[in-house]
Image (cartoon, rainbow, N blue to C red; front, side, top):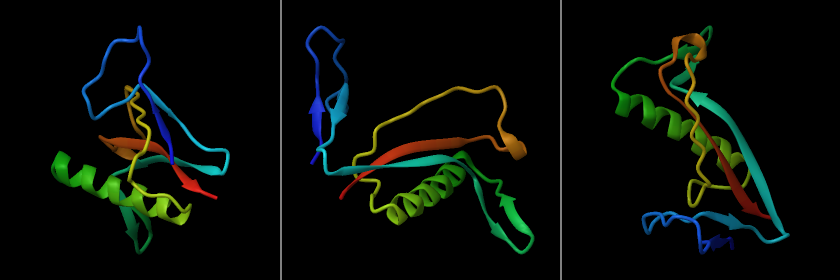
Amino acid sequence: MPQTLNVDGVPGLPTVFSHGLTLPATAQLVYCSGQIHSENGPGGMIVINGSTADKTKLIIGNLERVLKAGGSSLGQPPRTCVCVKELPFGAQIEIECIGWAES
């Protein structure tokens, strides 16, 4: 199981967040490429439009499938947030994550 890190001298975070975490040597990291609000269509990838909530649910579902394929889950992923000026394919939202799985 991961061990959370809350470090003295670093500004506190809301209780559901930690400053970081460490993983046991037996853990395996699963790096997920950034996912946009898309799904498979007859001719390949289709970017799906709709509300921000609908797009986000689609992205999270895609990330969950990638994590599951790597032996991980959405349980306790670290967080990454990057602001970019423009996304490919006219997408408005992209989410990436890193998960872990016990070996």
